[in-house]
Length: 185
Length: 185
Image 1 (cartoon, rainbow over the protein chains, first blue to last red):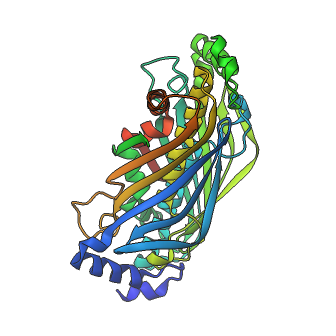
Image 2 (cartoon, chains in turn orange, blue):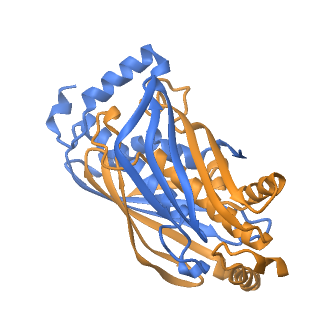
């Protein structure tokens, strides 16, 4: 669409559409394995690193290693050396949806000026503390609220965010079950 | 249990058991709301901040603000300014399970020397690219592998990791569905 040239949100939509074409012809290229490593420090404090992944039929690297500190807060009798893992899930959700908002805005010719989201997760910690077996360990509910300043109508912004949600990996990961196996070697 | 005094993993189990008692008597204290904010920078690059949360019946703060860069990699025609959000989900899972391993080891009197985990998520990106409507957007499967050096038998380490999995908030978030609402204000 010629519309794509009218907005400048920093997303290379042509490259993404090209990738979609290549991957449709060769689905093996679409098989990715993302990785993180986690190393325990002390107490509930651990450090994670993200550097390499598999995709496009080969081993791939980020341009640098990304490091994350994780811990529990003082309110859990811990040292608060990093965000709580459940907060890190909310970070991932916001980052995924916002990347989608920018990409779809670019494709639709919507110029963004600012995009901000607040992400909240309600959590009854009786589950993780083993205080009530009827209470689940994870979030009861998650809410995301966007404030977007852009050259678009409120209806177009609603549709933009709805489409990002529809294509979001992390939204899917939260709202649908995934098989997770945990082993000790 | 007197066992708890024999290991020194940096987890205050007595405080956690006390919290469990207080919360069992007053479930309102167990209602937490965790938060993150996300601000778009350019392209698929955004920055998240984690600083405040609600819990124990009042607004709470971390000792400092935690900041996360999120982006897509060069292989997605993006600038790789931070980890990909799906990788951040793996970081959260590892951090949650490792905090559980340390806490439960402390409670069981198991002295940990080192704990390392690799976390991998298989992802068919035809979903997020809209190349095949039959392919889900999220992970097909996630695998976590622990290497633990501790004063414990292989069977005790298996049981330790299994109990961490059973009490993990992020494990539950990945393996079970959560309601997520996304709005534009």
